[in-house]
Image (cartoon, rainbow, N blue to C red; front, side, top):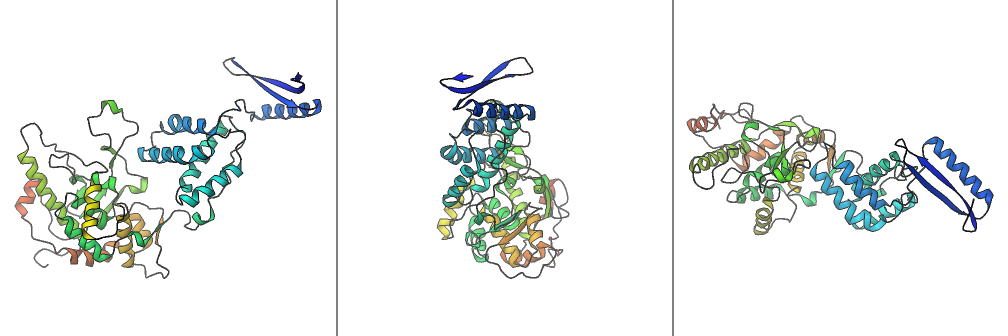
Length: 420
């Protein structure tokens, strides 16, 4: 039909609920052009690929997809939600958010990812999955015909690490001597146990805060990782107690994060020492305005309350500055742990499993020669543990009273206190 002195046609889409949507296609110079376009639309209607809403922009899709598709998934975590949200609102939307879905193509996405890689080298690894998954959703809802991100690869420099490979920058880790210095100095701080678990067992911050004494097997000298503390994305925040939003018990990061790992002698000793403090606080805070909360957390306040995920920050940065140590992130202590193990010739795969990355290989960027692989990461670490802290004698009666059971004073390496 003639439309504004040119040619065009209209499509009326009738939905299952009998509602209708009229879509106009116009602007063709000749009737033959309009006929060809009409035939193409008819084919799309038969194939189920016809796009009804052609004015939807990428930012509208991303906002809806994040809040109404991803956020409601039972296994979608608060950390992932925050990461996705930051990427969407700080990077994707400002750059290409105003593009219409029907005009978005591979060129737009490639240019965006390459520019992003220049300023923020690690961000494309987040941006690409966000775009790919959201655009797949758009295709499934017939908001676009094809997903232009499906075949796109990350910028070349980000592909070198390989799939399921974690590359640790040794420049962002501490040396053995620096680890000793930090552990000794932290004895007088409020985050000593957090540092012990991070440096000597490679635990994540959330895993450390979620540890309980009931997770410790005092006979086998092992520790079970079966929860972390963080924000529960699906919890009703209005019903949560004050100041507990980021202190909810949530599952570990991945299925591989559920694990049982040996406890080095020094860590075992420190757990027992920390329990003495726990018992002391519990016995003296039975009355008054603030009652001790017997929640069984190893890392807790003097009132038994769990630590928030950012509690360590001020104390940690202060220690680094006072000791003249490199200003690395707390998370980089996991890298320090992995590096120390690998310098003791521990199998890369074994290190990955202990750290909760069972399907990954961990590499340290300065290594080119492959040292001999040995079984049992604990054997490689034990000389270091022994040097840092010889195991002190414990009061057996006191330990039995504290834990309600006999506590083995045999060290993880099998030596008794008398012989050591």
